[in-house]
Each structure stands twice: as C-alpha cells, then as structure tokens.
Image: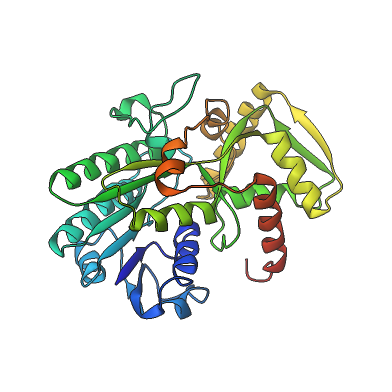
Length: 329
C-alpha cells in the first residue's frame, strides 16, 4: 500500500492524481482530516482514513500495511507567530509519521519539506544545506520546517529511509483549497482595471513537477537524500502581466514603492487579524520577495530526472484550470 497524508492539499491531491495513473486504486490510501471535501480524490483510492497527523493513533492506523508513505500534510503560514496548531501539525505531525513508519517497517518515507528550511545566503546558489538554528529565520513556518528537518535526521539515525523534498512556491492546477499562490493569481486575473505590484521576485514551481519528483523519489536508488524542487526566479511584474495576458484581463499595472507596500501590508494585515483572517501581503511575505531565491536543482535533475515545466505553460494551465473550475472554488 501507498499512503498520502494531507491528500486534500494542493501537493497531496495532485500526488494522488498522478499516482493513480501508475498504480491501481487498490494500492492507494489517504489520510485526511474530514470526510467532507474529498470528491475530487475519493474515487482514486481504495481507503480513506479520517484522522489528524497530530494524533499518533490516527497516523498509526493509516500507516499500517503501507510500504511507502508520502507525507504532505502541514500548515503553511506567512506570519511570524509560532502558534500551537502550527507547531503540532508541522513538527509533532512529522514526528508521529516517522514513529509510525518505523514501527510498521515502512520501506521509505517521502517527506514534503520547504526551501524555507534551507540556509539562504544573500547571493549565489542555495543548496540543500539545512538551516539548523530557528533563531536565524523570522517566519514561524520556516521555524517549524527546520524543527521538522531535525525530526527527519533523528528518524534516519533510527533506521528509516527518508527522502526529503524542498519545493519552492508551489503553483499549478488542482488547487482546490485556495493556496496563497492561487490568491495571487485570483487578484491578477480579476476584472479590476488597475493592478498594483511592487519590486520583488520569487521562484515558482509547478505542482505537477513536485509530484513527479516525489514519485521518482519513491523508487530511486538513492536513499536518505534531500532535494530542492524549484524552477527559475521571476519578478512580480512578469508574473502579474502573464496572468493578465492568459486571463484576457485588460489592466493597467502600477508599481508601488516598496516602503508604501510595507505600510499597506502592515495596515491590511492588522485589519485581517481582527477578523481572524490571513493576508497574503504582509510585511513578512513582502520581505520574502526581496531575498535570494536562486535554488540549485542540479541534484534533483541528476538523481530524480527532475525536469521543470516552462513557467509560462504552468501559469496558462493554472489560469485555464481556475476558469474551468470557477463553480467549484
């Protein structure tokens, strides 16, 4: 059996979709938190385990009888506050999955990490070298991924074969739950005539490429490895205009000064917090778009056959998918 945790998420449901092209549904099992909202994946698998990665008993029930486990469950946060829910899901959840895999003799665990857990020099290529000190990063999500990476190292030392993949910002079709990337796409494909952007860039990778790399990692001859799964650095203006072009959105694009974006992000984020919502553009997320995002993917290319799609094609496919599924989103 093959288990995918977090199967309702963007990476998780895409992974199940791609696995179903290779393996019969009788070999596929998922762990999700709710019996609702699984219509797009329920017919692709033979077993749906309802549970939470924070609960060891739930995880153990899901892992039992599995030879391979893909752990994609997690919470992504653009804030600085390390909440109990974030820690327990991303760190304790990782520990529970590792412990259950060890107990039930899983052959290999493929773990969805993040480039946020890597050391980031101001210039040059970013490699798979892990950051070890959570005090060196500001974001709460990054801190949890560093701590989860430490759990991975402990699991390897105890004898579990763990492949850890580090995707950059994931984008692509099948984004049913509304990731931060989809919110950005929704804004730039909207009918607003004036669209704002600011100086900044990041590295976006196609979710289908992430899934393909993870599937390749499952049967790879290389065990206990770390792989960056990323694409090319693109600036926000380029992304915005590309989304508008594929959406047939006739807009004027206005660049805002960075200091104004920080002020705007601070204000809007404060308003969102009052209503218990998360804002895509806040001072921390803006700062992420100012830093180095030149990731070295050569190891994944050499060992996993990683071949990232052209970003133009990814954005076009994503926009088309969003238009075709607007009644379901």
